[in-house]
Image (spheres, helix red, strand yellow):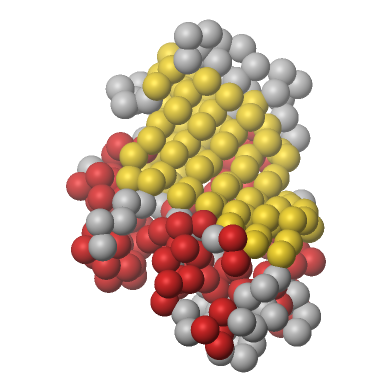
Length: 251
């Protein structure tokens, strides 16, 4: 039963990934640090799941759990996963936090993974390495009838990009070979979502301490003070044109 509520949250995300609203946030500070935040709102997924569950499952104590907490990401992982992790992966997980806001009966489930990078180089390393936590086919063993979370379902998107981050640039370019491999693994999931008329929104928000000088993505929305960039699409559009979420920003 240890950390069971964590397993419940992320196993649901694995099952209903197509109903997850994903927002990446980057808050660049004047002192050179940056807060990188991945927000996953699975409330729509829970609402759909609620209609599919039997009354007996909906009445279980696990489904009645209510959580609003922040914990270290490493401590939230099962012991079996911690033992498999390398030194760099362990350091990465220990320097990140997991925030959970869950009330399944109220169709509420939000998860955030947060990391503060002290330097541009650290941010670049974090973005390139975070997806390595998803290389495990299964984080731990099954608990009851709940499958464990496959981290690939939530953070595999990062594996499809290459990054370059300096004190004055933020660049990310999609690797089409990796993206096509990702699509092969998830094709049925997104096809099901499309058949059910469910969109898979994907948003990137970047906040800067000073006005940016240049941005090369014509779909990006720049704020009046030139300190915020918002780039938004969905998986259907991204499948048609993988370059939509490429970014080159000078600031």
